[in-house]
Length: 235
Image 1: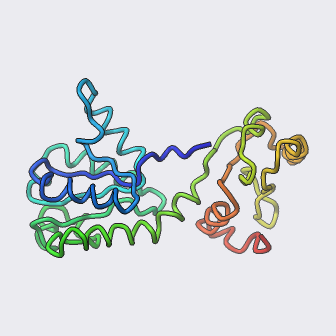
Image 2: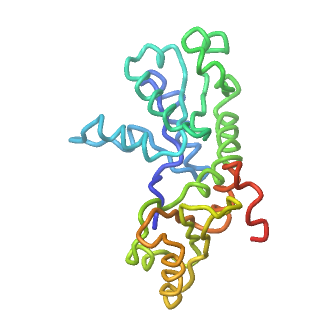
Image 3: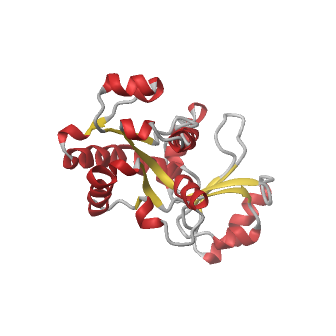
C-alpha cells in the first residue's frame, strides 16, 4: 500500500516572490530529490483552484512558507497557514519558515506565532536555504514517514491478504504490562491464514488495527508514546 503523501514539501508563497524565491527554490529542492508542490507546476487550465491547493496541503509532508511583506498582505495566507498548523497536532514538525525581506522583528510584527519558529533567511542565498530545508527534512522526515501507520482501521481478512510482506501488523489493544496485545511481521501469502488466526485469538479480527511499513516504523511509533517506550526491546 502506498502512503497518502505525494509531495515532500508544499511551497506557500506570494506571487510577488515567485520569480526570485519560490520558483528557483522549488527547482533546487527538486534537484535535491524532493517532491515539490508549487502552484505553477500543479495547476492547469480548468482546475478548481481551492480543491487543488487543498490537495497539495493535505498530501504534502512539510510546508515551506516564504514569509515576506507580500505574503502577509494576502488574505489566503492565513488559511494556508492554519491548514499547515493543523497538521502539527501530535507534535510533528511540518512548517519550515523561509524569511524573505524580513528579519525576526519583522516576522514577529506580522505573526508572533511564526516568529517563535527558527527560520532561514534568503539573505544567505537560496543554496543555503535549500541546504537547511533538506537537513531539516532528513533529520525528521524519514522518522515521521515511518512512524505513521500506512493503514489504520478495522482489519478484515481481505485487507490482511493484501498487505505487503515485511509490513508489521499491530492490534489496537494492550496487555496488562501495557505492551501491544499483538505485533507481528506480515509474512508471505501462505502464512496469512496463521496470522489471521492469531488476530482472531486475541479478539481483534475485524477490529481496529494498525499496519506499519516495517519494524523501524513500528518502533518509532511506540517511541512516540511514553507508555510503550521500553517495550519490544528485543526486536
